[in-house]
Length: 261
Ligand code: ZN
Image (cartoon, rainbow, N blue to C red; front, top):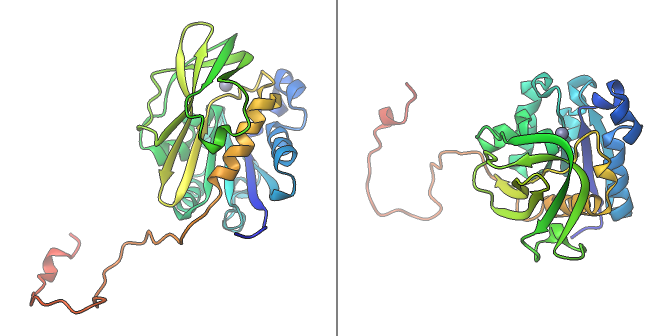
């Protein structure tokens, strides 16, 4: 263990805040600023936060930035298709190498989440300012550390409902119930390569959900959970010509079987 801070890059599409008064009123400095503040509030000097947005060169996610990112958080909604595929490739590679990824709310439809999941990642939705009750269904999980009670509520939310087309999660930590009747797996984890991925659904742009104390705590906890740990990642498949110890069998390899084409 070292005392080095977890290096977090908070990525935001940053369109609604510049084009819609309803969002700007809630997030005058952008959703990324609210998320960064939540991380600093909960984690203090244990975290070093930077932000990046769609309109920056390479969306602010250059190789250098990603190499110095332990955990990336992703919020996008309107412009998933404007995210350059080369950047998606780069982020995916970093996740496989061990970078943590938090996919927030409408990020379910982002290129990077769909790439990592391999499914459509689509869901049912309704914007009706209804109540959401978020049940903790894995109370031992560090992502819900410090939450009080069996559930918490968000008074006005956008409904995200099942069926949510994701592969079976490694862990389902939160399940939401909505006033209108639907339910949703609102907090799920996945492992990809050496990287840890957390999907967390609350966070619609016209409700002050990222100002909610429980939501902020969960996101901060998730950053700590997703930070890289353990041994290096050796995901590069390769031929091992020389065995580590002698092999008794005599075997002639038919090289033609291994050639491409
Ligand atoms: Zn939304």
